[in-house]
Image 1 (cartoon, rainbow, N blue to C red):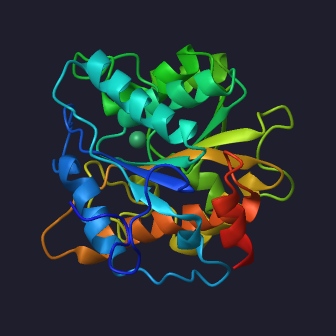
Image 2 (tube, rainbow, N blue to C red):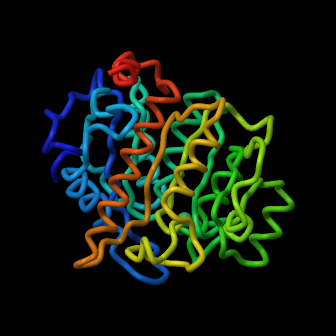
Image 3 (cartoon, rainbow, N blue to C red):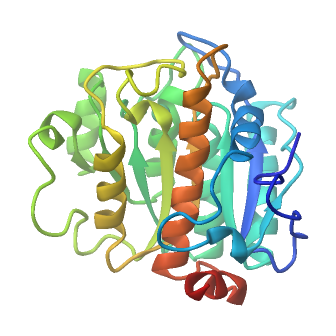
Length: 298
Ligand SMILES: [Mn+2]
């Protein structure tokens, strides 16, 4: 596997890098189209085409280290623990962990590691077509369709954007657990005025971006595509609005299932990763890494 943006940069060593890119080629509980295990490799390959300057800053100057892919061969608990270990290693280096999925289940181990480190002072903001709040799916509690249920059960606050597909039981979980949300149907009318997150939502955010939050015309290369999704500038505006007064302490981009001939999807996912790195730089470093601050002024 090539390193993220290796075409433009000498890959940074783990210590001192502002970002640790962590590939997690997990594909275990596919419910419709397959291929998510090839997502990380496709994002890394497409990253070679990115422009270093994103129009506002040059996030790559913060130093990007691409870690070894997380082993995904053990049982579900072992895989989540391996993900948590890789994320903890990034946090130990003062870097922002950047996970490349793989199916959405990978977020759980990452959120667990970040929450452990932050003493629970972290909230998850999920961009997704689906609520992913099922108790079990296809017989597994570790299915991609259950990952946010596991997160809220761990006591981590959750806010959802772009959802347009959920079961009646998931809707009930949302209201019982008071999970905040801005669904795609409402966002189609425009982004509401005022703060998007509740005032008491944690200041430290872990962002999880399921690429199927994007409209399926823009992002057909995903396991469970849904019409009526977000378009590029809407997604970027939402990210900026959500981050006002808050900061990113880790993020993931998941569920890219590359399709032969649809290379714009791989590139869109890679660009999303880089846009999120730029937001980290603009909003302030997660781990206090001076390299990220340097990229802000460069
Ligand atoms: Mn999802």
